[in-house]
Image: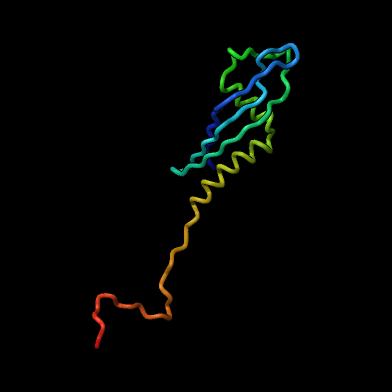
Length: 117
């Protein structure tokens, strides 16, 4: 199972009711790594309405808080969907790709031998 590193790349804020600069939209990246393999997903989501009792001023929020808000807004299924996309990229890299092989019923042509005349 991959390790997932969430990063917030952009936030949008607006006035909501009596609260100024409420973060309403978040853009994020997810970097996934497993055994030297990498996956990457970008996404965005609208956040849940703010709770006036626990509102955090824009200047005081941390990336960890915004990641938590983002995951809450996405819900368990949404988080699993985005992380699953990154995991699938890694899993695809683990699949051994087929190679072209000579047809066993056809003789291999010797390109080093000159044509007999």
